[in-house]
Length: 228
Image (cartoon, rainbow, N blue to C red; front, side, top):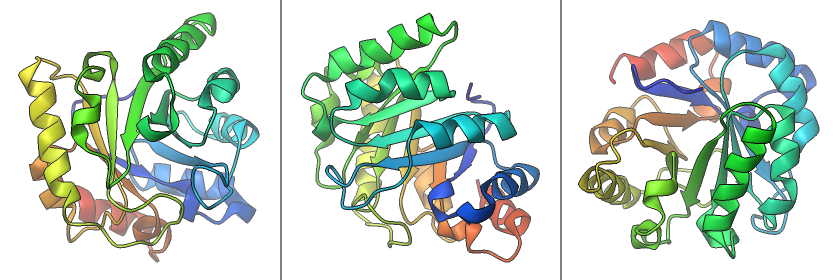
C-alpha cells in the first residue's frame, strides 16, 4: 500500500525499455522510487495501445513497491478482476469512461476483498474535465489523479491550468475532512515544476521520460525529491 509519510515519486513504465523491463523496474526501485505507475491504454478511450494484466502480473513478481495501475480504457468493469488478481495495489479509472462510477469503485473494493487484500480506488480526470464532476463521489475515492496532459502518449508538456485543478480538488477533499485522500498528478512532471505542483496540494507524482530518459535514474529522482 501507499504511505503518506512523505511525497511519493511514481515512475511510469510507459517510458521504460520494455526489452528489459525487469531491469528497468529494479533500477528505479534502487534509485528511490516509491511507487511503480502502470499506464493501461486500449486504443479506444485514448489513441494508443499499451499493456494488460499479464505485464502487471510479471512486474508484481519483480518488485515489492506498490503498483499504481491507471486504466485509460472503456469498459473498465470487465477487466478490474484481472488487474486485481495480477497484483495491482491501486486501480484508477477515468470519470469520463465510466457510465456508473460508484458501481465501478465498489467493484474494485469487492474484488480486493475477494483477493484477501485492500485495493485502493482511484479516479482520474482529463485536463478539460471540471473537478466538480467528482463532488458527490469524493468520499468514496482513495486517490484522485489529475491528468496534466491529454492522455495517450508520454513526453508531453505540462498544461498550466491543471495546477488550479489540483488546488481545487485538495480544497474539496479538505472541506469534507477527507485528509487521507491521495492527490496524484500525471503528465509533464519534471524537477523544474514538481515543487509548484506539490505546493498546489499533490502528494504523488508520476514521471516517465523525466526519469527513464535520464542517464542516471537516481539523479533524476533525487532532483525531484530534493525540492519536495
